Structures are given as C-alpha cells and as structure tokens.
Amino acid sequence: MKKISLRDLRSLQTKKLLIGSLLVAALVGCSSNRPIVDTKGVDMPRYTADLQECETYAAQVPVGEEVAKGAVRGGAVWGAIGAIFGNSRGAARGAGAGAVAGGAKGGARAEREQQQVVKTCMRGRGYKVLN
Image (cartoon, rainbow, N blue to C red):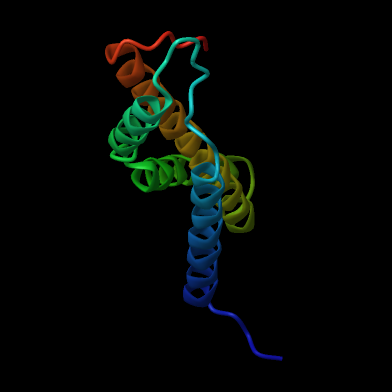
C-alpha cells in the first residue's frame, strides 16, 4: 500500500476545495435575478430591452471572486478551529467544510447584490418593482 504524503494530501484537499467552490459558483449562476414588475401599461419590447441592459450591469458583480473569498475565509477559520480542537486531520476536515460553506455564503452574497443591481436599475428606468 502506497503512503500518502502530507504534500499529496494538501494537493488533494486543494482540488476538492476548488471543485466545491466551482460547484457553488455554478449553482449561484443558475438562479434568476429578475425582479417582479407591474407590467400594466408597460411597452413590453422596451421592458425586455431595459431588463436585458440591467441584467448586463448585474453580471459585472464578481460572483466567482466572492465565492473564492468566502471559501478562503471559511477554510482558514474552520481549519484553525479544527486544529485547536483536534489534530491535523481535524484541521483538514474543518478547512474543507469551512471552504465549501464560506464559498456558498460568498456566492449567496454576490447573488443578492446582483438582484439588487437589477431592481435598482429597473426602478431607475421608471418601472414599479414589486419585490
């Protein structure tokens, strides 16, 4: 049986962290930023064009960057907690779990920001946003 070195273990953990973070980013990217708008009396072709422009602005929110920041923060905090209350194995597990949770939190924060950008943009264009 081949022994796994600490370096190999860290490399494996890094790969798991990266895969988990990318998964979270993909899931966050699947959600819709569309606000609920009162369309009574609204010119629908103009509404569609305005919504697309507002969504383009919202796409400038750096979702991947927020996921990565959250993953790093979560991994560091939970890795430290695992090291304090456990051993190197506990630290590794804590870092992995913290990275995934932190990445999800960062992604959710970026998604909320995107939704806010779309709503603010649509209100600025005179639409009655209901949510």
